[in-house]
Image 1 (cartoon, rainbow, N blue to C red):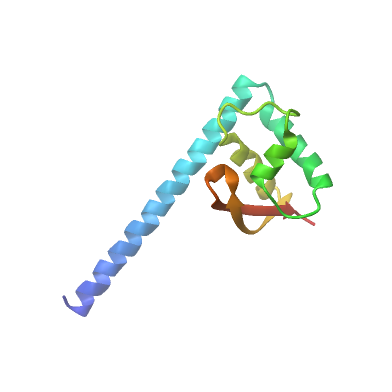
Image 2 (spheres, rainbow, N blue to C red):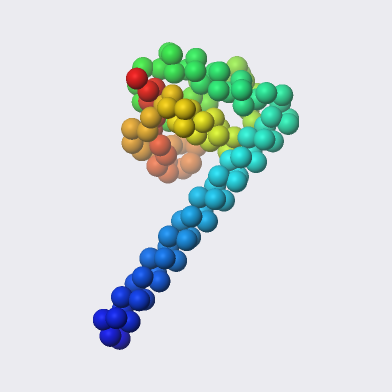
Length: 123
């Protein structure tokens, strides 16, 4: 294989990986949006309530946290959404509004210790 052929091959691999990542992000975003919509259908204004509860949590929480810690703190204060991906919508909205900032990654018990984002309240 010539150098030019190798470069073309590597370029195609990079392009294919980039496209796969974009498609994965689109599937993620679609799933989160559907879960959030479904939560509001099942429990009226579930997303607005979850956003308010996150605000209360952020007033009380002084350190970094995982989303699952917020959910555990909620306990019975808010009905669980029919699809747990709806929690992702709550966290993403807060991040987009700059209410929280990502400070790293930590193991999440809810995901078999897979690394998940660690957040803190924005200053």
